[in-house]
Image 1: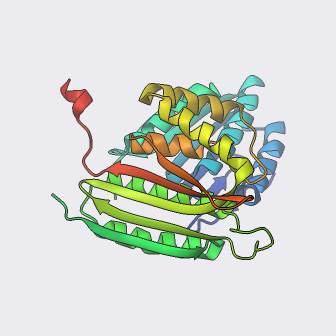
Image 2: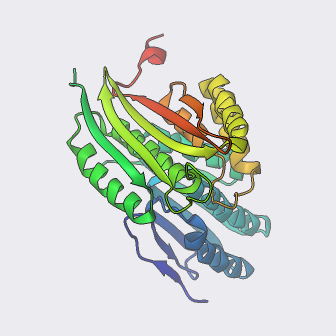
Length: 127
Length: 178
């Protein structure tokens, strides 16, 4: 299937999903007012991908900011990945946060708890 | 000690274009602030939530004036705290629900808020306006203080909703010291 790419903007993240390698990256910030318009195509792509996923799927979440209406959609993405795991495939979530951003680290823990997926929390140095 | 100062004052209709513009300006202004970057990040996050609340929920003062959904937004630094203040009209019929939600959030401890956040994240449906009912919980977590609010009845249809979130510029070390 085709890969999926959305360039980042001031209010929306870069989305880079590679169907062959199974690496799904979300990078930047996600603060749009109308989250449905932005995330709906992302979820549709994942629904297709779930039918025939790579042997290992790695979701890399590297967000500087996201608003609460994006947070539901991030969980929706992870729920689809959970289904892939339940189908017997390897999955991993890599959750990146800037080293002094305790909030984003805690949010990663929240998602780990709620999604029930294997998580790695990765601290990165600030630019 | 940082001096007290006004950072932003806005009154008008909150459109998508205005949000983009204000956030862009505020990003530059916050960069110039002396506070730690983790504090600035919280301030920016709360500002985003506040503006999006105004965008989705501000009502006209009188019925039939839907074209003029004016709202106000202010930010100032006072005595060690960033204060983000919003004001908007809401329908009287929504006051009770909003008040109940704010009181519930204000009644919870830090750990309880986190638990509540996880519950709502997991269970709640996304509302028609895109809100996930997480906004107030998220702001309370970022603030670490009680959310301040006041409703003033304006007429038979609307009330005015004052709302304030405070974010301390100094990170609290109380827990680590205890």
